[in-house]
Amino acid sequence: MRSRYSAYTLKNEPYLLSTWHESTRPTAPIIQQDEKLQWLGLEVKSALRLRQRKAKARPNEDFVEFVARLRVDGRGQRLHELSRFLREPGEGGLRWFYVDGEFPE
Image 1: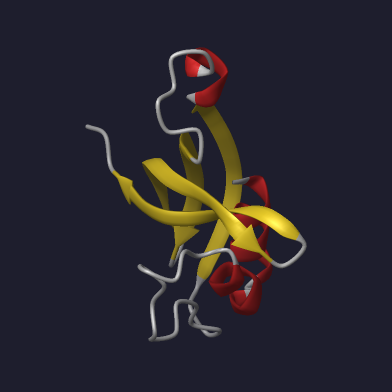
Image 2: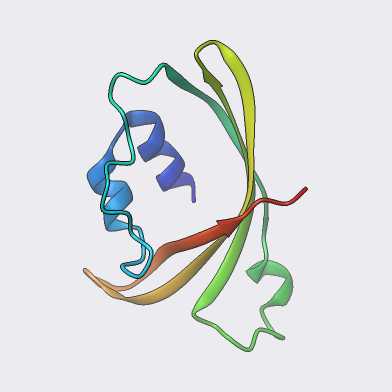
């Protein structure tokens, strides 16, 4: 999660795409280089695996809840997401891939 946040702050689209699950990976550009966007911070609220390690029926699926703060055209915003990740074979062994997310109220 933190590496994907860092990639967004650095506008590193190749890294973001390489960590995105192929079933949901966008084909259109996800970063606009001229966009007036400034990332201000990331707070990881929970990694559900820590609480559910023993009860987890799907060991290759996990969720991370986070809040990212950003400014778009000078206006502050918050992105609160519960992200879903799948662990699958990738370059160098098993890797976690971002699949999708929900936005809690």
